[in-house]
Image (cartoon, rainbow over all chains, first blue to last red; front, side):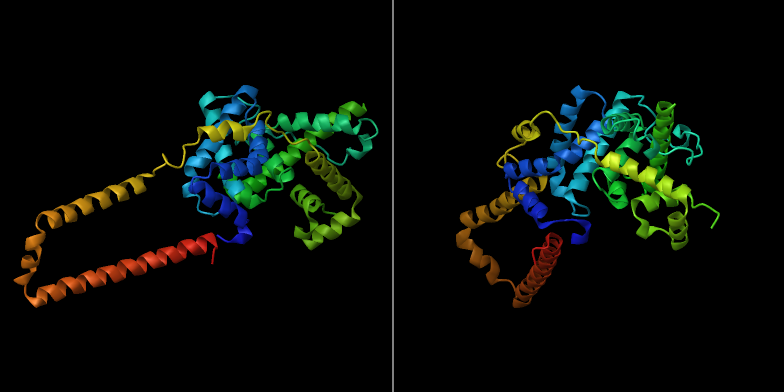
Length: 199
Length: 148
């Protein structure tokens, strides 16, 4: 792969240092990527006490597999994939019934309403920005795991469809359609909420 | 002009209109309903972007680094096998040389020159082949690391 994939010389240098036994370089890798890992862990793992163990597990796996990193993606994307798979294994092991199945699509979709009946802007005066933010956070948390993870990584971490496909192991087309449904579901939920508030 | 674009196109317009179909762009820009819908999505995306980023409330590096094996104890299986082979071959060659050094030259005195040349020739071919493949592998790895 080439630099257009995002492999930067600093990552290569850091990996080289880690492979030569410099654990401080691994500390820098952790610092550079822990926010992204936190996004994934917080979205996929609801129990606070398990997050700490999982975060450690993710980076220990990263360390032990670093030698096999082929530079086919950004280092951060590769670590995000490890984080996603680790959380997925944890969910499967715990047999968690989360709000919505991981890859469930249509069943969780709200029925489409006339989207032109109401807009968020109309209700801006009713709810403050803080309240809006709180409602949005809650609605994102209530989305199925795969949807909230994709939405967060795309809109909050500015990851591309290709990177999301690498992280989740899903085909790019599936990522796009899942994101489309997630955005629509979120918008519908918010509109419904706003309409209730406006009444 | 009366047919509204699909919701997918509306979303795409809200994310990045340069990726939209021209017909859809023309329609959306002149349609109040579609613009309102685009505006909804844009507000939604802005809201998501403005959400606080979660962060671990513990020092992850401080937890992970002490659990990493030190460089000295970290010996990969490949390194272990290579080390063992080097030791084994050294013993295999070294011990007879030490024990029978007086007779070693006599071992070769009765061999015909043809066999000597054949042995030297095949050894040279093997060494050249291995050197070339090693060099190719090295170049490939350097290219991968972009150190060139």
